[in-house]
Amino acid sequence: MVCDLERATGGWLVATLSRSVHLANEVTLEAPELDNSDSADLLSAWMKARYAIFACLIAACTTTDDRPATWSFISTGIIEPACGTAGCHSQWSQVSGVILDSREVAYKTLVTAPPDGNGPYVIAGMPDRSQLMFLLHGDEIRVMPPDAPLPAADIALIEQWIADGAKDN
Amino acid sequence: MRGVAIIASALVAVAVQRAEAFPELTIRGEVARCTMCHVSPGGGGILNEYGRNEAGDLLSRGGDGGFLHGAWTPPSWLLLGGDLRAAALAYDDTQATEGLQLAAFPMQADLRAAVQAGPFAVVVTGGLRGSTRLYSKSAANYVQSSEHYAMWTASSGAYVRAGKFFPVQGLRLPDHTLYVARYTGLDLFEQPYGADAGYVGDAWEVHAAGFVHDPIVDVGRRESGGVFYAELHREAWAVGVQGRFGTGEEGTRALGGMTGWVRGPGKLVLLGELDVINDQIANASAVKRGVGLLGVDQKLANGVALFGWYEQYQEELSLRSALHQGAGLALKIYPRAHWELIIEGELQHVGPRGNVGLAMFQAHYYL
Image (cartoon, rainbow over all chains, first blue to last red; front, side):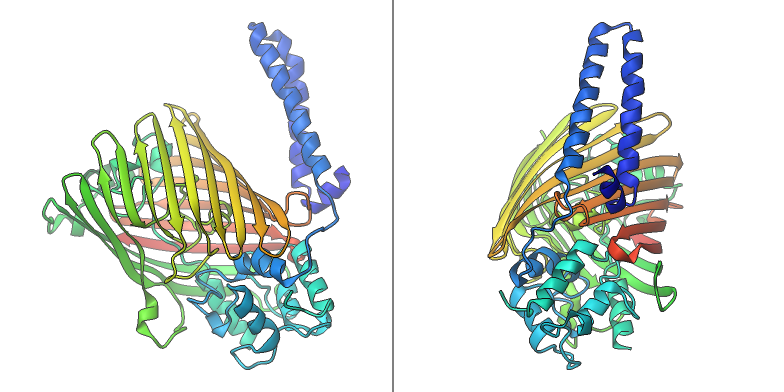
């Protein structure tokens, strides 16, 4: 479990937790040397609580993505906050004529009738031929969104949605 | 080529920032609360007379902080100001096929005014949106007002206001691209319309607001709801709690979180924010998101400060591969009153792309 978490977080979280637990051990061992026994008890209780928190954090994470590969979820949960921001693909800015900040318009932009006339960004059923996937992966082109690329789980979910027919569901 | 054009413009557009307060001053304990220098109860925006007087001595390395450097003083019932900001940036990611991207662009051009009559004030901020390219043939699309509101303030610190503004929430750091801003309803131009009331004192403050989505500047999550923020501050530390609820056609979001900071020796400050968001998306399932920031601020000398941060955003708390991580370091220099220079480096580790790096220089001048 810890190894999976380490892979998922680039090692940072596990390293931090390990250091914290190590520190917790050191401090707990040193606690009896404190003059104030109440403080030592409080410190010990706090360290135990930290063990519990870390255990919960580690146990809570899974590798299974239970999120639905539907346009309703992908549009509101992933595309709009990542791409439809004020400075980029909002109705207000429309950078390169692309609007991705509402469910209906974003679907039209990506799947049916892109306003720039360059063909759809999504080819239903064919994620490996959809330009959206090239943009999200950054294959032969700089990754989108450029400031905050999507995590692997989001890209996999969008790929699944396209493979399932890119329905407006 | 289309892709390159899209990226170049988007790259720059997302970097556009708003000018806000310098919350480090409050956090470092150099002023007791935001309202000592600002009209707004949450800080940011137009400066009051005290704020201008202190701008030369407290914040920067000297100079006259008055409007137009003191060349002309508006009547006492009128406060005027403005912000001009330009930036240059370099961007790269570890697997880029097109090399380093460079850009320079105007970031902000805003004018600010506040008319005061006793305890009442009307505040307006408006100007041009920053952009590297023309995206619209209509000039009106480049003009915007990020805030306008009427407010009543008592000498005790209590206030009531109504209009367009960001409700008081979170650490109130100036960079809207930080995860704790962009994923909690505080991203660029997401100011809603609403009303709030609260109290701001030397030892504690509390704010409660109700809001509706701005139908004109139609960006961000289209939701209406409420925000609550309370903060207790002492000589060496502060802790805040917050809640936000918003609902609309796209779903319902509920946020709960904490903020805090503690002062160390030698003008060192540690600060942090942690929020959990339950996002019930319409016609889909609910997700639980988590967003947090840990920062360290160090004043190096009068008018020179260093701010570093680490941040995380987990799109689904139970899913380990839905994690965003970022870290950055910003050197802030205030050479004279009215001037702010920022040299900033930022690194993000997200998904299969590996690392994404951004270096930016900002020059900010306020009238």
